Image (cartoon, rainbow, N blue to C red; front, side, top):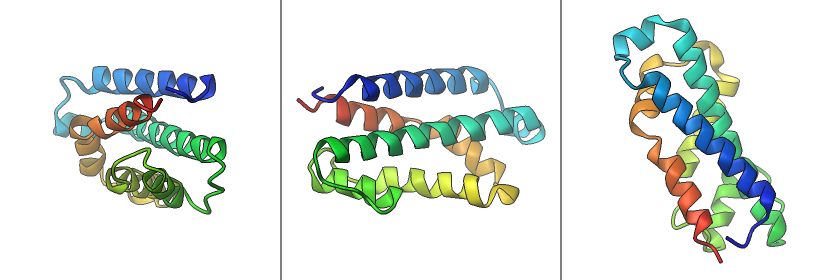
Length: 136
């Protein structure tokens, strides 16, 4: 990848959160998750941090490419698509929407949504990393 060490460090942190989240929820049923405040909080925070990492990397790449700034996180992801760095902004835009719910509507986060993302949709974070890593 042609981008700098800051991005690589962010990917290392992303990988750590992915691994820890998977390990902590590996054998956890939704019923257990729903009733375990600590598990829910851990999952919400890890997912938020991972989305923040995606946003930070997008904004850093935009700055490196002199293509910014982006007014919003969603715009930053869209610029990566425009620059040909990612194939589609759709999956990543959904991440940002979820992050906005965690940050701004934190009192009404549906545990089923958090559980589904944490158990079934972490591949989007890996896909983002892989798309950025392939850039030369």
